[in-house]
Amino acid sequence: MCEFCDIVQGKEQAETLFEDEDILAVLHLKPAYPGQIIIFTKEHHTIIEQVPDPVVQNIFKVANKLSTVLFETLNIQGTNIIVQNGTAAGQTIPHFSVNIIPRSENDGLNFQWATKQLSKDEMETALLELKAHTEGIHPDMFQKQKKTIEVKTEEPKPVKLDSKKEDYLIRQIIRIPRV
Ligand SMILES: [Zn+2]
Image (cartoon, rainbow, N blue to C red; front, side, top):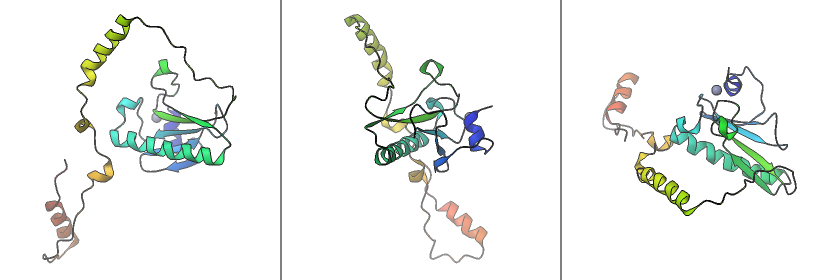
């Protein structure tokens, strides 16, 4: 079973700090630093690639706000906002999440990586391979934020409505099609 899904379903206890229809932010029970927050999707998605774009957008907006709260409430000098995407990246629970780790000078945590000296060829090969694929990414590919997809329905003033059902049908008809 999945630890985060258990929290969403109330089978596992957690201290909730933020919740909306898509995501849940809780206090991390095994933190690297006191006050560490973990945000995850309510739906089970293993890695970020599976998460719908509007939810990705939402989760990082909330991460930003919660990071600000950590700055304002704890005496810290930084935060790390981290996604461990896949077991090779240190992911231990197969459910997409974002960690916000409060940081202070000399806290003993180390997120630095040793840099590699690559040859010009290695750099160019990587660049060419990437470019061939990143050029196919276009702004129109992203799903719009849910809130903007919701269609505003105006009251059909000249039409007299006899029942709620008709009202509903008229609303359906005058809806602007989804893009
Ligand atoms: Zn899950």
